[in-house]
Image 1 (spheres, rainbow, N blue to C red):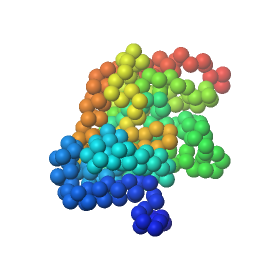
Image 2 (image 1 turned 135 degrees about the vertical axis):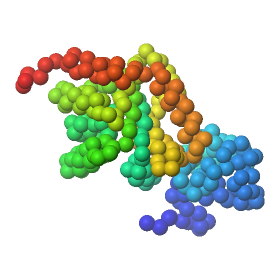
Image 3 (image 1 turned 60 degrees about the horizontal axis):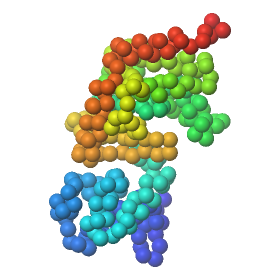
Image 4 (image 1 turned 120 degrees about the horizontal axis):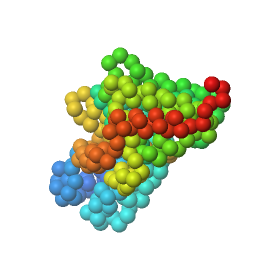
Length: 280
């Protein structure tokens, strides 16, 4: 679909309009990306990705640009429109899925929901139905999510580390049988040689990723990207400086988590605490 434009000739698609304004302001001041980076104090390559529409970056970066250009909150307002544009989520997610398939290793942290790579059909079905899916569309989405698990189950699967907050691990499904099956699957997956599962206990307190579900993908060539997500969207980060800051927060949080052996015991204890299945 072609970009919608009006009399000004500028795009009416929020993400594209944001990128166009960034480039227009820089070109008007006859600055190169490197010069802009030096004057604003951020990695110039990040501004290049923003002008290409590959990322919208963070509010702090956009505020710094508004200050530099003397455009009080103009860019921030455009950033908010771009961040709220749900049509962009599918596009970013498709790119993430492409990168996930190429990854040579993966790290993950779950705040409140178990990761798709570790979900059983029952868990995925209940979660997706809460997101508005139903009928045939729901079953198609569940099937697609189950296909993702092949990444960890095929030949020569990549190393995968997941840290699950205790909140995510104790948020049970409404269907008791489905929840039992989910916990059983987690325990079994944690025993695979390519999977490292850790539990972050609630008493660990606040940390740098307290409100952020995040994936790190190590790609061929040792480049790492990060993807953060919530129930209504997600953001792919490819800028090295931003990804490194997030990785440092992840490493600090990992130091607070239980060991893999202790984590497996925790899952097993939760499984044993569940009421007995009357059908067995």
